[in-house]
Amino acid sequence: QVQLVESGGGLVQAGGSRRLSCAASGRTFSSYAMAWFRQAPGKEREFVAANRRSGGMTYYAASVKGRFTLSRDNAESTVYLQMNSLKPEDTAVYYCAAAPNPVVVTTGAEYDYWGQGTQVTVSS
Image (cartoon, rainbow, N blue to C red; front, side):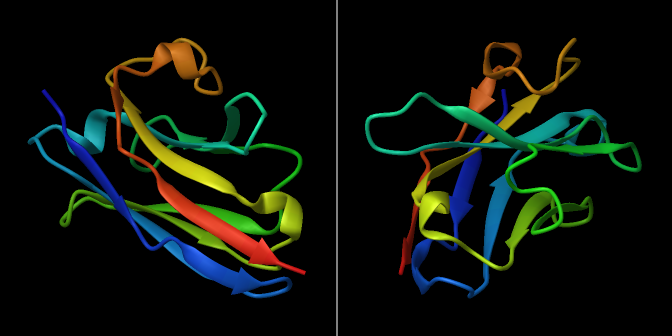
């Protein structure tokens, strides 16, 4: 069982930055795929970024590539999402997710564990 707790959301102006954190319980953090998804009001959940395992390749949605960076701290069992050059369209609830061995890391259905979400609002 893995528990995920996100933090770091809030209100930020367009062009600003924000760092989200996701603290994970459990002793197998480094071997799990970790991902961030987001859901804007009235829209479906969408993939943001994912890392299959510590030291492995990181994948990004086209809409955030070059602006967002996913990183992991295995000692702290925490995954981060550094968001730069934020745009109003980045406004959403951001969710952290974990899975032991997803086939497709960009698909939400592959993930077994989810956090409660943290709201990010970008004002224009």
